[in-house]
Length: 424
Ligand code: ADP
Ligand code: ASP
Ligand code: MG
Image (cartoon, rainbow, N blue to C red; front, side):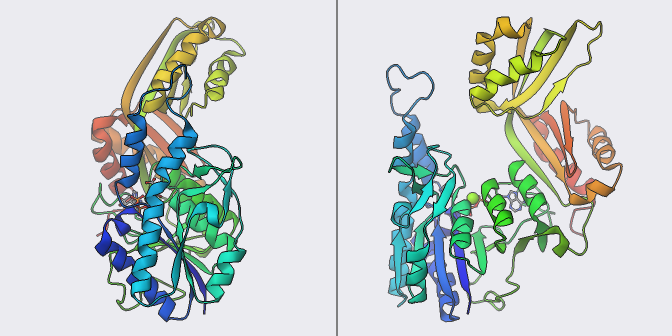
């Protein structure tokens, strides 16, 4: 007997039929004698609808930093998961399974005060553990928690993955299964490249890079928690027949295992390709080339919570003036330009230019640590397709390349094939 956390994403609970299908997956594990906690997302599209409603509300008079009250945003967007947790509990009961729903505040899942992007601080798992031991399935609303102000908090988009891994850690589950609409983690988004291959295993570090560089199959924070708390996490499909052979395999269920790199026997040089849309580039022209300029630019941007990513500084031709280019999410351009404008005198630049609609494609692989020439291969392959590179950043296990938006899919496919990742 094992203790298993099963998480089902939006498409897996998109309608009542799909919720009944999820109940069959849960029943399989219950019938096998396991203790089960389930974490659900909102029905697919629901969270977007709720966010849209909030964004269409009139702006609060006098508010200059935020268009709405983030605590009310959380109260509204957390509701999607409340509905699916109740519906799944009912579907399970209808199959003769003892089940009840749990909202974040009922467990409670305690978070910090960062409404809209809260972090889980603590989960009091005793109650659900006791109920699970008594044979009751706990159906937990994902994405939501309880803030220190005693109000709803939410964990950022895609946050149900994080709820699931955190609950698995709190109840010391043997496994955390993330059920979604693909049957595992692929070498790249299978929607963009049908030749992508499913990975049997992927190392935590690689999955962290893939997720933070755009592969939304897992929320970044969930991978961090799985790594820190050593949660055995699988990504697998809810769209397969719940009772097909092997679906209930305890040690090797179908799907992709996220694990320590030591567990991966045949490590490839490149494991995957990720992409992130909606990047924007901002350039400051003719800056003074002196100590303190970068601090004067990026300090105020950081204080305004603008996430700066790639940074490129040109070498100054005459030793007095230079250019600085960096990227931010497209949604932050206006705010960034305002902050730069407010600090123009302190920074001392001539003109500021910006360009939105760019895409960052990234090549990821732990094997890069010990192999030379990985970046050169990418540059050559992109050049052959006539794709212009606007900026580059690298780390030990990844190369990120900024390109024009319309080339995104071509670039992903080109990189995927130039490292031999296409399935034969
Ligand atoms: P859920 O609603 O179940 O949380 P998401 O839409 O958040 O599902 O994540 C699943 C999607 O992630 C897939 O449909 C797929 O298009 C996308 N995806 C992006 N990169 C990858 C990848 N490398 N492997 C698998 N799926 C990926
Ligand atoms: N429903 C939330 C979202 O769409 C959380 C999740 O699905 O993980 O972002
Ligand atoms: Mg998701």
